[in-house]
Image 1 (cartoon, rainbow over the protein chains, first blue to last red):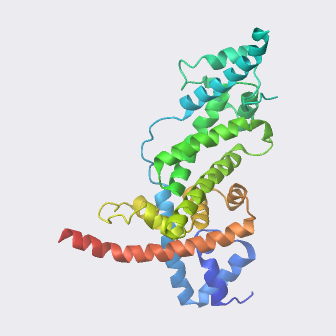
Image 2 (spheres, rainbow over the protein chains, first blue to last red; image 1 turned 135 degrees about the vertical axis):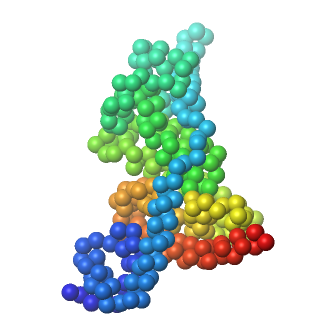
Image 3 (cartoon, rainbow over the protein chains, first blue to last red; image 1 turned 120 degrees about the vertical axis):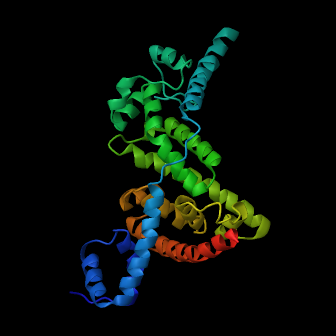
Length: 94
Length: 224
């Protein structure tokens, strides 16, 4: 098992806390943490911050003022009408 | 085939259908079961309700992401509207073998970031501050008594992070996109996204702990 330094570990703690450290790096990190109480403490602190982010993500969104579709549909239909008029104009003029 | 205005070419029957805007919020139920790729194909053929179904599927999430980035719900709705419009006018360029969601969010997030960067440049020219300066200029320090809820607290701390780090954090930790999807949305390599994610979480943690330490004191003062 590769021994990694606290410095190597510190940069990866935020990734580990969010479940983004995988494969060999994850194994090296777990190995290091078993022997390093300081990094374990920092991991707990990182975990609390990530938990706050995740908890905020699951909070219900405030009610929205309505769908965007009516205004978009109107814009689409207006744009489609324009070329018909432009194409028709020269014929009518002649 | 497209007309010069960017709208999809229409068959006569489709044009009549698209002119019926009396009930603009409604689309026929059969669209609901279709995949995004099928809806894109039908939209290209002039089926507006198919595009309406795509809007219905993604608008809440898009508005939420842009609100979290821009910290302004009205601006987020305007940017979302522009995003859907841009996507609609570029549907012919979309490769239906790819996923529609990440493409839509790529367009939306980039529109949002462009807008925020332009605002930042404008702000910088006025007072010489960077991104952090913009945060404190646009969004005055909220009274902790008012923003006591968790989401408000998280939003306040997020606002202190630089824009590129905030974007990655919002997409990965608040919206649950995978690292690969975030990389595709922000048009960066996955390794770059992971590096930014580590940095963003670390900065968030430091700010979050500082804020949590200050909050009880502020609440105590408020009670007295």
